[in-house]
Image (cartoon, rainbow, N blue to C red; front, side):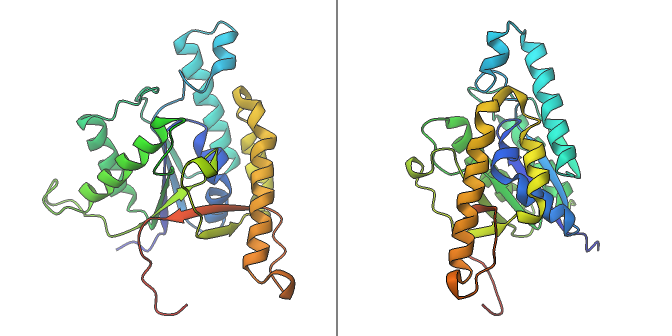
Length: 243
């Protein structure tokens, strides 16, 4: 049995993995993980306003968004990025899409997974993605689904930070210091040229979470001097031998 550590990010749109967990991706790649990103859509309809204002066609918008995401993935050293092209606003999350994602989960056998907050009234694609991810995780664990395949264990599902945190009922219980890979994340952010208005916003988020990391790792009594961090909310209990 392989002892390769892996992780799987299920991203509703092509840029979500960059803003919300790009640091976690780059850091875990550096730690020896193979991180796979599954982009359910390109975000071509709802998150590409600038390209539509420029008169681009649907195929052109998709192509540009894919290139941006591929360039960002390279900046983060992503092991594998897959585009499912399920449309957006709304996503098409039918049975065929479900089977495809279950196949990805079983192939990756992730040590942990990441996706969106469980509530997002501003972008229902996001919260539908997490409900979908939980369903696919459950199916991947079922011995009766495609018997003979290796079933999934019980990877934690971390919910990364939404855009308007207070409105989503999202409460972080984990902060990750991403200072050593911040340059990778910023480079990835700048690959998303269609959403330049978010570049500094998510830089500020990372700085604020760096402050929270410092406070919760010891504060003035010796906390780690993290400059940038990401926050996550875990769905399932952790099983530990010591705290």
